[in-house]
Image: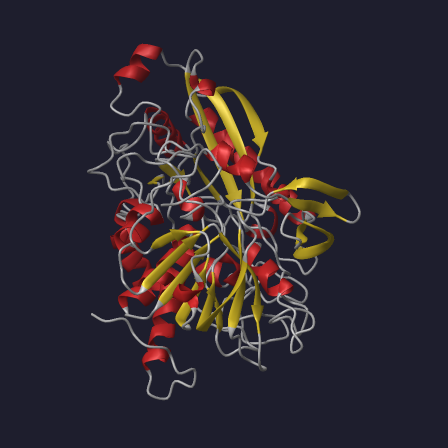
Length: 536
């Protein structure tokens, strides 16, 4: 049984492999083959890959397992915040260094939007130039294609529908989505159905879908799709309520253990392993490496060239909303109406747009509200969100402050200044959002800032991948350049954030990295000498 004082915590373990808090030392004495830190999009995929390969795997999650009725707002209110801002404008203590802090991470409350990155996202260097930071990935779309396909199949993502090019609205659209589809056609755009990680045969359109758990398991968050089916595996130990504090070294180029703290009792333990995979998110992973100060790494692991934490990207975004003609009877009679999924239609006509400043725009898609209240008005509410990639910058970074949190650890600082070039691009995308709403019949259009600079659910770039250790932290396979057995498998890998929701790309890349680690562990020349494999 689990224990937690949080009212949203589920006290029943996910399975026989799940324990809340640090267990007795006897369970932790033998080195694990792999320790995975973070149970969200990337960490869950990596952990499953290792367990299926019969590697003895430990998955660490700082948060708790959530009750079915847990609310996103309550989970967020319980999470530790960060300092956000910069030395010029000052620091706000309400910075947001999470997606969400719980088993399954942000996938539990996300809307399920699951895009593949485009060729441009892997190499935007023709249009995007940044001093001191290469923006080209060391892999490309072809490298990820088979892993995209595998994750789409696992998560029930219909990517074929995204590229269909049809003119008539498909039946899968919400009522606002139907208006938006027709408005896009009127503008000469090519609307697409938003690719979603949803099992349609299980979905009954019961809610708005975003910021809520799915009671039927239709939304393929990683707890439903991956961790639940894995939770009785004999070679997995899943610990929730346990925070990874730092990585420890006994010799250069190798980490031998992770220092952990029980988030409730404060008990500290060191857990040994042959390999470590970091998947906490682009803020938490960078902070962990910066806290990992050893005699061989006086400035933090992987930070020989002061690159860890730099290049933080959070994407710019803004909501736009208007009211179209529509009555309550029509809304209620529609098979979907306002209900989920949270997004059913999108346009990429301005993704690369020569009229946009610097030639790079972004995605615009339907984005329903998190709750019903704003929809209880006369007329039909049409709401979209514009998302675009921010320019990576050496100055935008994760730092550690002199103040400490409840564990006595340095408080995280989100040091971020919005690039004026990106603000100009966002202004252009807001105008295009308004154009789309007007063409869809909306009036009284207004815009709503997302406050992305305070922290974001889209986090990228702080342990960037590349070939040159002077400008990157990990190589193409996610291994930290200066270490033999530490890997990064979350959004911090991304040298350029891309202009689309990153979750599917994080998952596909985590699968690619984990498969490579499995091959290395199985190699007869593996110098790390993996521990014993679990029995069949």
